[in-house]
Image (cartoon, rainbow, N blue to C red; front, side, top):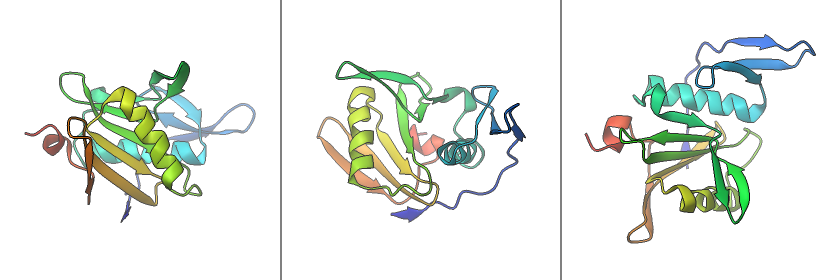
Length: 153
């Protein structure tokens, strides 16, 4: 487990007509309800783009997938330059522990998606793995790889 010290960023906050807090989502280009999980997701997006060099155009939020006849959504997916999955991110609220159930959920999604990197975070701690589907093994990483390192450049 590694502490994920997400640096602050200039979040654009506002309120809905019903006084619900909203945050500007630059990827979806709209205001979304500011839940604790959304706060973590927006911080991770900012961190990946600003500090680790992931291109904004290769990040997808809440992308749909089908698993066991059910429609599911990923929190965040980074693609490589060819459009293939690179990094699957599962975000939880800071009050939610990153435990075996969360890991099972993310690895289950990743069986369908096939991303070689998997990140689980609640904004306070994170776990990152490199997944090798051919050998059915994974390697725990100390840090989230920068985009250039993740794509092998």
